[in-house]
Image (cartoon, rainbow, N blue to C red):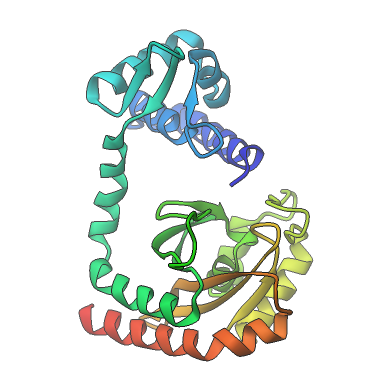
Length: 276
């Protein structure tokens, strides 16, 4: 996710945190500050100075320093004397893996995702909705690729993600309106991201009707995405997606990949229903 989008999301969370501090006597301010600092690091900010952390999270320099010192002593952050910047440590992965391990049959779904990726010769992901964002909970990178722009834990605004749009389409009107108030601007990851609420509603309605969605460069420039829903208990709980460089036009990508993706989604659905 580009830095401006990530920073905007962080500011929204910080504003929410401040509101909860004022209204909820059981809200633990220090814990919220620590989590906000951890979330401030990312692909665009892998390391930061004390001043940068303070500005990005919205804390005073003194408060930011106390949080960083605490995280350092706990092993989640380390300070590099050479560049005089703070970095996340590998221990933070434990937080993400704790969540993934709690998901039903996560480790058993991964082989099915790898099988689909090998068949399509494209990277494939399973995404889940987390508020106004989607997070990648499983990823199989195409073997021909040396680098991948996504990994488990990667987040995108839900309105920019093909899988996200499918899950948004499963919300009730009340749930959707609460998540996307008419007076709030939708985030855009690329110039092609649909961030007009009316157009987003139309796109979601079409996806709900046809049972899949194709998007063009909404998450990454030069990349098209195709997604199908994964239903559990009759609700769209996850989205199965693949992305491809725009070598082919949209109809060709759909014709090539959709049948295998639908079969894979159905197999995963049956597996999850049995496990649940």
